Amino acid sequence: MESSSSALSRLSNLQRHLQPPHSNSKIRQGLVKLSPEVAEALSTGHPVVALESTIISHGMPYPKNLETAKEVEAIVRENGAVPATVAILDGVPCVGLSMGELERLATLGTKAQKTARRDIAHVVANRGNGATTVSATMFFASMVGIHVFVTGGIGGVHRHGEQTMDISSDLTELGRTPVAVISAGVKSILDIPRTLEYLETQGVCVAAYNTNEFPAFFTERSGCKVHCRVDTPDDCARLIDANLKLKLGTGTLIAVPIPKEHSASGGLIESAIQIALREARDKNITGNAETPFLLAKVNELTGGASLASNIALVKNNALVGAKIAVALAQLKEHSNRGDAE
Picture 1 (spheres, rainbow, N blue to C red):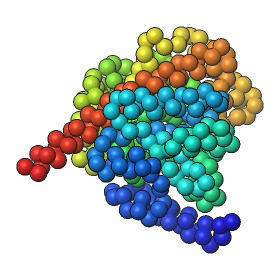
Picture 2: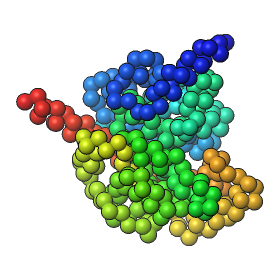
Picture 3: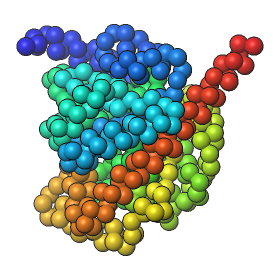
Picture 4: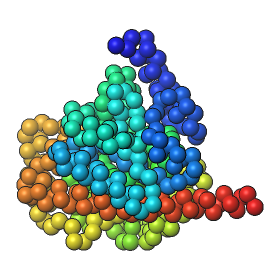
């Protein structure tokens, strides 16, 4: 059993570094555990893609969650990058999980705490198990020097957020952590126009991949235009590289539309969302419990169509994200070679 003084010491060390650092000194201090594969890739400049773990613990039931996690990691590898799934296990932040650790997280399911930035110190101090959300995954990715992160969809401003002030910490994290997030947009259970307004306020560059319109997670279109369009992994890499070199200190959101063949009926999804929102209000489900509840309810109401779409878009994002990470690594290598000359 760890003594209270030891736990407080570990917590104090972590809290001192809750701003993403510009070196890997925090890894040497033992605050974060890198898998051997991820450590080698980072040391040699090989492309690495960070992956969140809340989708494993809270996004779908076992064993579908484990199967999907393995398939997503395989897609990243097949396209030239190293996957780095992020989670906190027994109080230790891990970047890159072994198959055993991945299976453990999948079987834990919702027993693992859904961990955003605000929860990191608490989970670590209590030697708990935490599945990282977008904000926590971004924080740890930036800490170890990973610049590309793939997820399904980011959080945002909840519907009626102007009254509840329910705004995901994903948005403020994008405003202060220089990691590129590859997603299918904002989860469509949220208020997409207000989310985009909030990201603008945070100074976050929002780019759409092969389209001029921001995607709506389950569907290709939201009706909201974007000011930045990128059409290739090289375009994305140049955008990310410019952001890093200029030290803007903000993340970049690259929104990739769900493949057309997997796009759900907009009308069907919206109808299910409205029913789910009413039920959430009636049951007083709020805070970080609301999004998992809404997604599960929408999946139930659509006969599993929304979950199938969710898995398809995550896999597509992994494909695109891996290619972007490879292009960024090549750009950095070319730049370093030029500097050496």
